[in-house]
Length: 325
Picture 1 (tube, rainbow, N blue to C red):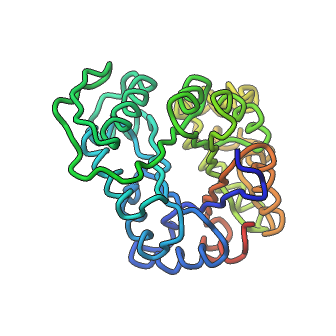
Picture 2 (tube, one colour):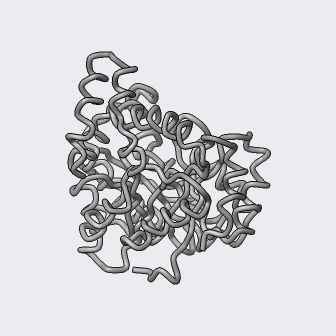
Picture 3 (cartoon, rainbow, N blue to C red):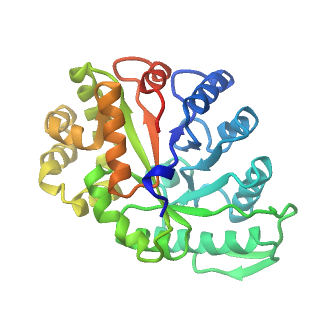
C-alpha cells in the first residue's frame, strides 16, 4: 500500500461542462495543479477510451485509467485491442479498469444479456492476462469462448488490471486476480470496511475511489442536485444491495419503497441531508480537500475527484480546489 505521503490524486475526465475538443485546458489545469492521474468513465456520455487517448498527448506525465469499461459491451478481443492500444499510447502509465456495469447499460442500452457478472469479470481478467501477455488464446471460459486470437500489438508493459467492486465477492476477486480495486459511492468511513477485504490478498493492492465533489457553499442547491443523483443510482439493484451491505438499509428504505411505488417526488424527499453529506464531499475548497483526505486516511491509495457542477461550473471548481496534495 502506498503511504499517504505518496498518494496519487486523480481527476475524472472529461468534465461535463464542455465538449471533448475543449478538454485540453481541463487536462493541463489539472496536471498543473498537481493531479497525477486522469480517469475516464463510460455510461452515456463519452466512451472510456477517446478522452484518455487525447489526454495521452496533452499530459505525457499523467497516469491514465478507465474506471470503468464494462466487460460485456465489447467482445473480449476488441477489449484487449483497446487496452493494448492505450498501453502503446501511454507506455507504463495506463491502467485497465474493468467492471460488470449494470443491467441498464449492458442489457437495455447495449442489447447484451447481463448474466453471471462475477464470472464474466473473472473470465475477462484471465483472458486479458493471457492476451496482453502475448499468448495465442484458444480457451473455453465459463461465460465466453475465444478461438485462435493473438494480439497484433503486445504491450511491452502490459497494463495492470483493476476491478470495479462493490460487495465482498467482487472485492475479493479484485484482490485475488486483479491488481487493485475501483470503488464508488461510499463514504470515507466505509473504506475501513472495504479496504481489508481487498488487501487480504496483498497490502500493496491499490484502492482507487471515485469521490463526488462539489466545491460550493450553496448547500441547498448541492443537496437538491445530489439527491436526484443519488436516487438515480441507488435504485439500481446492485447499488441498493451495496448500500444495504454497507449498513444504510434503514436510511434508504423509504426512498426505495417510494421509488418502487412510482412516487419519484416522495423518493427524493425521503433522502436525508445526512445521507448526502456522507456520500458527497461539498462545501468550501478547504472542507472539500479535508473530505477527500479522509478517504486517504481510511485507506484509499488514489482518490479520483468527480467534479459535480452544482453551484458553479466544474472547471471553476477544479481551480477553486487548488493543489490536491
